[in-house]
Image (tube, rainbow, N blue to C red):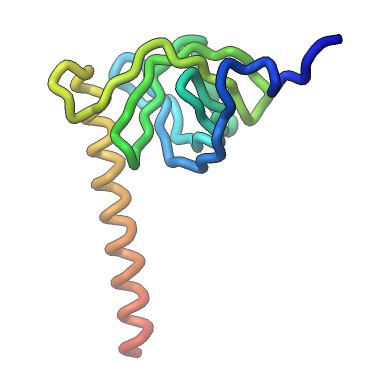
Length: 125
């Protein structure tokens, strides 16, 4: 008797909901969400623009990036198998991955500042 798919995993996956970016060769392919994760891979919601078979997955909040291979596709999600992992503050990590993360963090701060300014104008009005 075959085990259910989740019971065949080498390690359990943990719920996550992490903001992430999929990239290839220094370019952003799509913004995405890591839905659940373990040390070997993740289930990722990618929307309409799925990454190629091999890509880089950047966890924006933690500063961890993975070279990953698509294990399965079921739009709008993919299963990603981690091939290599870096902490982006480490000097041996690919520089472009850190550049993409920093750009996303700056854009998020600008977006939040704009929203806060709008709320403050509403309060004043």
